[in-house]
Image 1 (spheres, rainbow, N blue to C red):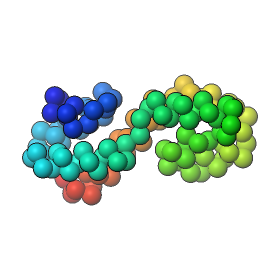
Image 2: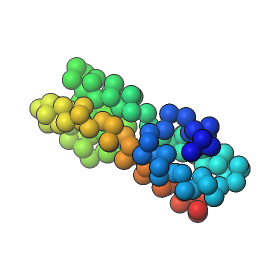
Image 3: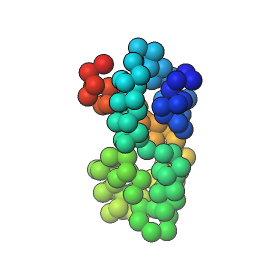
Length: 115
């Protein structure tokens, strides 16, 4: 796992566990290529938390747009975060939402690389 940390700093435990088996098989060039593609798509949980908090005071749903959940983003935008209830739920689940998005992004990058 030490190799993963050098290529993907700040990754969650779930991300590291998912990527570990692939990084064992990667050459250094493949690891560098994967990390460049993945880091361009990866979202930070702190950013998602701040955007969710912003939903209380400015515009609800920004975090959903950032996570490519466009339908829910529009719904939150039009309903004020489902009367703030959805925004509160997102505050509780922001780490899981971010991890799910990042794992999906990792799968997409792996498919692009055809690993």
